[in-house]
Length: 415
Ligand SMILES: [Zn+2]
Image (cartoon, rainbow, N blue to C red; front, side, top):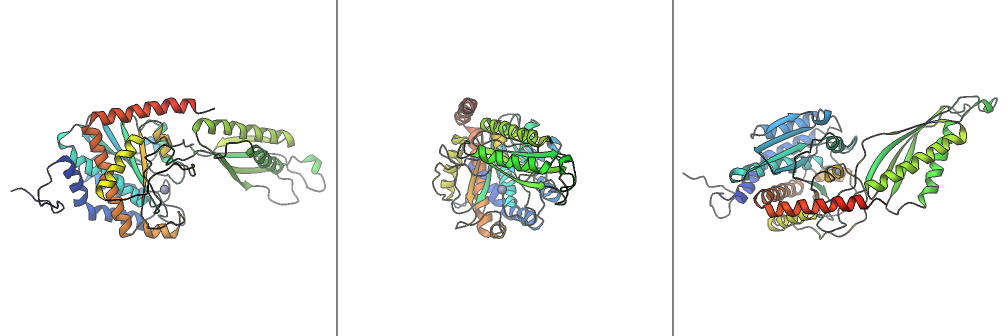
């Protein structure tokens, strides 16, 4: 006897690949929400997402995915794969929380958007060849897990990478040129070593490391007039001496340098390094200039993929505001993936109003009926986009062509 799937409004068994994708996610609705709630209840910060990553990977393993751990030397990164051969469609899950806040960025929802999409596409793979991979990507909020994974070659062989991030009522799918932009970003640590001396009785014997750091800030402020309006350089002093009557022999600062393209970022980093070297020369201190974390690139969104995701949102009844060009604001390690593989990180609403992100209000929205409902709709849209890519080689060609064209643009955009 044929099984009638309860979610099919016509009471007909889900036989088409598309119906199988939607039905598979619908069947797992309660289990996926339970998985997300577990992650929400046990917020784990970057690189400590032991239980959250394990819960996601186990969920996929129980449904037939082969799981590989410790990608790129990150103990909480995993790859869960199903199917065989190319093309390979990847969904990226995140699960890290914010220190002291919990899931104030909704990564417990990103976790199930990826896991749900993976399960959905796996169900639709019956009559098409190809592979589906769910990557567990840790530490988005600190150290940039995807950047480390990208550098280690983890995404080699992936034909398209899809993911989603929750947002406010203003969240959109980045379908048009200039939408969904983020800044390339590099963390920098600037340390000066000087020589301690009594600040009043023999200051002439001292070399003031703090003065070099202050002059670095002054130099950056002077540079600021001449950088592009959407570039950003901001920093803090993390060490600036121990006592006012001692010439500081050690001073340290942490900075973030951001720019609209990776190429422009690298120019700004060189400039900041020259400023710090100049500040060292002014006092006689020695400079130790280093990167404090893996840098992230700007986001090269694949618009062909984004438009397809948006079409599925429309079809599934999730209405988002129209995308429009926006000035880039924050930064994400998705950028590094987008330089290697055609990528989209769509945004979607989990609130019906605008609020401050990384807040207690978002913690609540990330565990709300609206949050779960919309996330599962997103999982379906991502999975259906994956199915389109596997069933329509023209679409995949179009995606690859756009990616190739973006590569040319990126090389030319650095000036
Ligand atoms: Zn986030």
